[in-house]
Length: 70
Image (cartoon, rainbow, N blue to C red):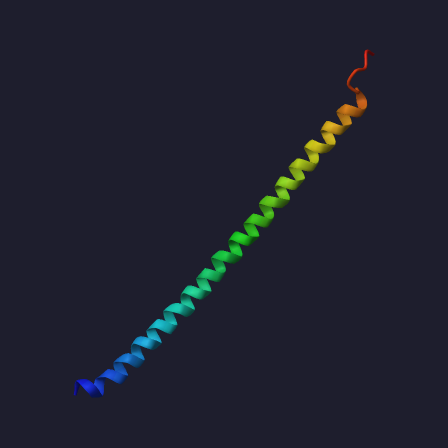
């Protein structure tokens, strides 16, 4: 009887394992997708901040160059 139940039990275990992998894959991809989206937004925000600082610094330099006595 144990031998007759083993293939069915093994088949159920494999189905559960595949279902778990599919759920993990789905949520894993969702987490990866969210983190990629967040990192792109963060990089864009950093670039915008760096660009604003760069423009502000260079405008100040043009307005009063170093070494100027006026």
